[in-house]
Length: 399
Image (cartoon, rainbow, N blue to C red; front, side, top):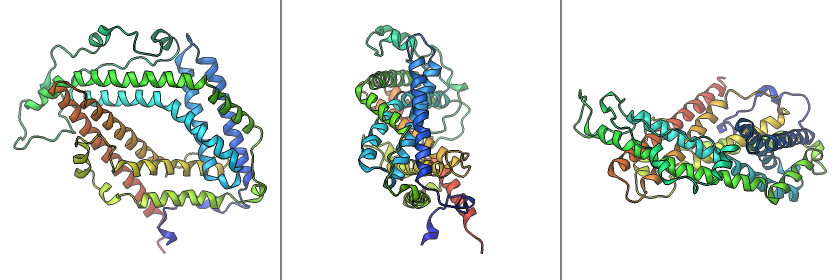
């Protein structure tokens, strides 16, 4: 039964002389804690009003990166660490990483949806507002309350004369029954072109408001006593790692293998047979239903993405963080990232479509956008299934 697992461990690493003990874990955690403190110092130097936004964004990304790696390592190798200390710091680092990631997530989601609208309709869509950092955040007051009411209407006004005939054919919306190739644009194209600009304006208002609130939440979090307590714990971690008594002689490989097996079991539970087809009609039909609950097929895939990340971090500990990214894991992780982004974008489009008293053309454009993102979800699942099955077949011994 052991052969059913998708072995992602480098065979050469298994032949390394001597066990990889808790000292390697301590060195890895100290290195990540040092990166966390370095990123925190950079954030404080570049995050003030009037300074450039690039350094602050890079610092926040580095903070999230080190916090995720510390959290993942504490989860995978928790038997080798002081239990009370680990259970105290791990949820705090997860809170910090999630809080700092929200603003970037909303910004990327808005960019993804506006780009998809333009691709589907050919109509001009609203341009992205500048990031709410530095002087921009100071001028905006980190809220949208001070924005004049006419600014949104003026900035987000639809084009005066869109040209439906010159726009590309939408790839996500199914053609109406009985229609075929036609030299002129069908009526649905006109509805989509008219509604795309207003749909983009609606998405811009909703997601910019959410991003602004996330920015304010991140600023409050970085100035809170809770964050300072986390930073103090990480500073202590940079100098001393609370290992258990027997950690110095305990091999880390069995714990890393357990993380790999949890990933393999989660992948085995996925409907990879369905994902082996580029179109999943059942998922699309459910996604177009009026039920606002999360899509039931998405949660297992999100779980696999988290387990794949834990497996990568476990490998980094075994190789002291010096091993380059595994080319076998990279495409699988990228496919799962695209899956997560498309699923969340589809949910945002569906939520915007539930806005009361919107025009029928706007609702139609949002429905087409939602269907397009659900197709992107299925395409990401198909890509993951292809690279996962291919890698497994290459690893099955022929003898």
